[in-house]
Length: 110
Ligand SMILES: [Zn+2]
Image 1 (spheres, protein in one colour):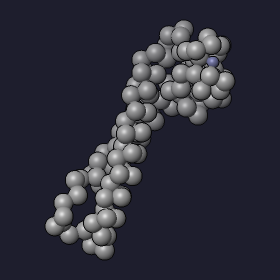
Image 2 (cartoon, rainbow, N blue to C red):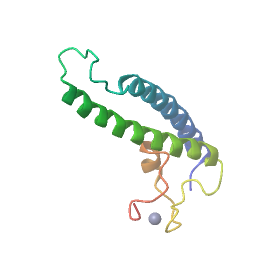
Image 3 (tube, rainbow, N blue to C red):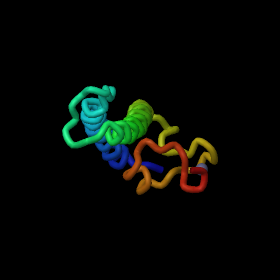
Image 4 (cartoon, rainbow, N blue to C red):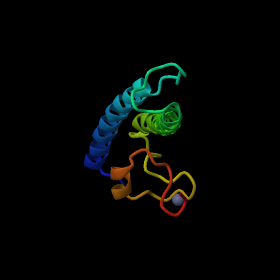
């Protein structure tokens, strides 16, 4: 069972994580502009630029997914469902939620 204090703590952590993630997504977006063949990208070859772009895109996708999950967690945090594994209905450990407040599954069901 999650105590009132722990819930508040998790809520603040979610709000902080959302802020951080939004910033990170903005930063990544400003780096991952489409690669144009004639654009001067300093010492990077066009191939490097394309490789970097796919890394940026992957991390952008991950961050956007996590942001969605965090926003959902923020909506659900006052629910009795929050912190309950969606699969086995056992409570997820608070230590685990403190690291990843958006997770929906316990260690066993991940
Ligand atoms: Zn489970």
